[in-house]
Image (cartoon, rainbow, N blue to C red; front, top):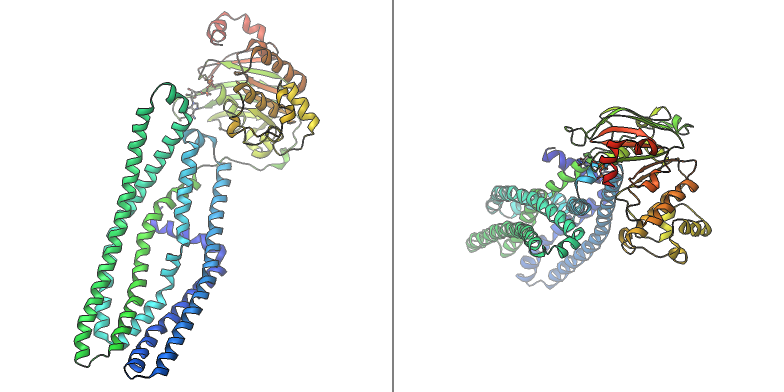
Length: 567
Ligand SMILES: Nc1ncnc2c1ncn2[C@@H]1O[C@H](COP(=O)(O)OP(=O)(O)OP(=O)(O)O)[C@@H](O)[C@H]1O
């Protein structure tokens, strides 16, 4: 996307707030017009009042200047109120767009990038993009009138001096152009370095136990320090660059003022100019040069915003899940699942799953087993439409699963994944998930999953991702959540790894009792659970090795060696 296209896209963010923007600009224009009168009044104070000793003129002009200032400030408050309102609305709108996009994005993206990295990148980008609703940008655009008025004022007073002032524009333009180019590179560098630091932060926080136990604090500290110093160095360079930009502007303006005083003095001595004219001229200079600087500086300002905008707009382009809306197949009766010659590859090169064909009938209890990395979770992710087959078909009730509206399709399932999440809410809220369950049913459920210790405390908050619970308690809570919801198909991916043997047997009984009629797909190697299964699918290196009952598998010596020995 070109810089111009990005700027256009950013300006489109203002579209819903056209009316407010119009009022903001009107306020700025009125304020500019009022302020244009001040130098003329100052000129009168000097030439008509002070020099001619006319007190009435001094008093009247001073009063008008004060009134203008008063009105100007009131207009400014009204304008600021509206402008900050527009900025807040744009910020909210972008945040909500990010939220919706995250909800729709493909799960593969979240496997590649840490949550801290996503959060920080998005936060920085939104903060930068919304700078386009900052006062400085509005001010610059509204100052065209001030420039025009100022230039007219300068030419009325003296055209030769006016020409001298206007010579500053091309110099300023070229200097800013150079600085803006450098700034854009720094901004890009900053975003990359900030992203890397966020990733490292995430890694350090999540790996704090390993860092402590394996004594790698010093190495990690060095890694962190090195990334941090790269970032602070870029920040330092950016801020020095801004100082250079400001300094060049101030020096140029001061140079013009000094030249005006020197040349103006000569002209005054030759009676070509009055003292009041010089004072008014110097005031008009700021009316012209400050806004021109502000407009030219927009290029500098945008050079810091564009890299963020580019990254955020690219983020919005990241692929989303396909969500076919086909209401006709909402209430399909038979919910059997059929895989037919399914192929899938995570990286597009090496196949993760090959030639997968099997069926899971409605109400069947099916276990999926196989060595680590054989493709069990990928298979479940294909069923849940977190991935799409590269080849072959997966049907539910005879309909290709891709033909269902995605939300309707997923509403058929309950899931406890290998890396399940709990919310920092109460035990009750984690189970109900916005559904309304009676206290009695929650108590019974907690008893059933052997969490009786929480019966009187189900309003207790459990910390981020259940940090205040033990590993087994977390798993039991995730299981309780899944089985308490009335769904057609229940998927459990290695969800008993933290359970003790008694809890494991209890889980096997529980799914039989509570989910007797339901379809269950469970990844496990536990014989206590496998015994209860109608069918066991064994996967090896992405291919189906065998489909059979527990008995069949027990009679297969090769399987005994390869699969059961790993459990
Ligand atoms: N997001 C991913 N990107 C690239 N490759 C992946 C991704 N997820 C899994 N894989 C690869 O796909 C293969 C199958 O992984 P999968 O998680 O499905 O195996 P699994 O049988 O569930 O393993 P485990 O028993 O260890 O949980 C592995 O070789 C793994 O490295």
